[in-house]
Length: 363
Image 1 (cartoon, rainbow, N blue to C red):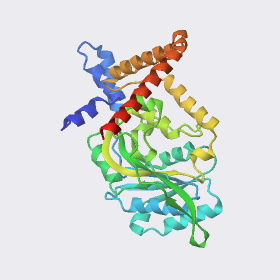
Image 2 (cartoon, one colour):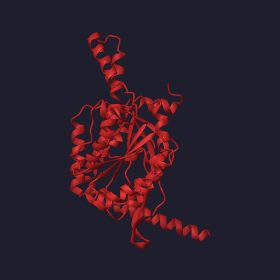
Image 3 (tube, rainbow, N blue to C red):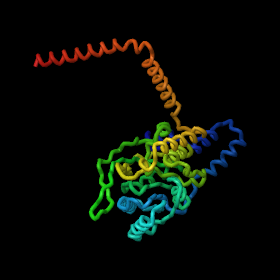
């Protein structure tokens, strides 16, 4: 049972297939045949017992940013909870970059390096290495950590803490954002520098409806239950050129629900200059991927969290107000009244100037 009001609200306002099954089974007049089928569904989607570690960390790299990947591995080595494995997914690295990544991994302490595996992936879009990592993972939960971001020491431990009572829901932590830029270090070394302070720019709590509009959750803020992929059979959409994280967040959250971690656990580095997903892919590529995510979601059946009807009604009421405002500003009456509005603004401006003058005189 939730121990606080905030935990109770978070528990209620989460969507999940298991919650729907529980709700149907609570109906006193349910058909026994349907009840039997639903009990079978309960068994099938029950969280499996994993023999592996708590967390499998998928670390994507293309061998281009070697200094950031050193930082990434240092972040993992310094976690307060070490109950995790690391799967480094080498996606289309050139021979020089691939060799450099292997050298960096070989330099890790044995206690940490022994839990690192390398998976090589050739071709495909950004989702292909993720699917390869999922097939290699043995953890109860799976998280994605790209090689140019940062983790605080509590990242694994906070996921682990909330997972104890999450019943297989997705876990979402709080992530800050920081701007960085590439630069040359001494001896022509490819480095970088931070150009802003970290800022907690993303919502602290998960909002399902808001995420239908835009992704407010960087990838490393999530830990996905392995059952999402093993039991429900979800895979990352390899047709997407970008938005593969947003697509999985939306599909996974409506199936399994979400638990908020309510702790700052990572920093998302936003690169200014140099290569990134924003520069490697055109506006058309982004627009096509976003449209594909929406189209798939629009063609599916959604289970929304409790309270969503109130939110939807509020949004629809706002849409009506916006439509009325739009009709007003484009109406003939609005155009005819333009000189009058100008006169009213002039009068207000004159009164403001007069007020300032009177204050100066009194002074």
